[in-house]
Image (tube, rainbow, N blue to C red; front, side):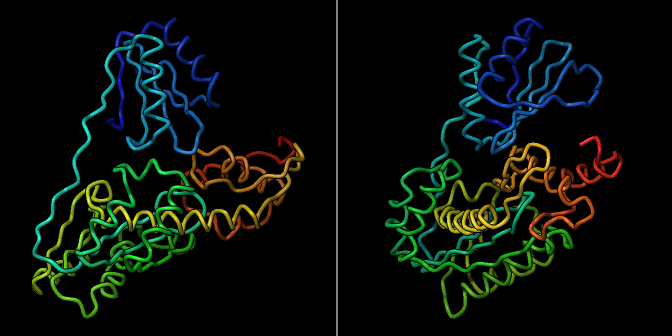
Length: 329
């Protein structure tokens, strides 16, 4: 499925029916944005955000990550219920094929790059060619982004005895202070150097997240040393080495978020409810509610150290609270 799903010739009456159907299943929040030709927009609040826009032309637009399982099911269910027409679901792309002229595989991926809370975890996996088919059998399906926390932990425990993982963690303040792609470049260079140490005939695979000059020079050096280098978008979908690096990175991220939720609950001074930080995703209701409750309870304190203070949703909240008296809350 694409990140955009468009349906046309939607009457206002049908749009209202669709919105009511969605609100019966999910919590939504209306947007205040006023764009030419736009009638209404709203966000569906779930673990991964979904945006919906309805235009005067009768166009209904849904937006989210194409890997978002909830997005897929919502689109399909809505299209079927209201006879909206075809949904853009492409055929599965087969696992990318590798040349056989290597002895070791190294794959790279990260977790938590775009979240509001917590660290970003970078992981490089390293394993011999002989272990490739065994590791593939443990994954057993292609779209690992749909794995639950339980499935991630289960796969990680099966895989870890058949490969090596090299991990680097960037805390919230480091992400605030630096450029994300520069941090990724330098972190992966460090990890790949550790993973390649003493090994020959390597195949190194990394997602093209927008790598910069420093990383490109490093990868060129690997090529000059007769190693195979693959740089592709969606490498975590198409290469086992990157898939298991993603599993390890997500496992580390899940562990940190569980710790944050255990250690940093607060009581909302208005509702009296105990709130935990949630998943850290900007669209997660727990994440937003936690930030607002923290600011109500501690109006003059710095936000907790695990909050990425330069993220737009955090800056928006700070502006909201600084421009209104606390009595309003």
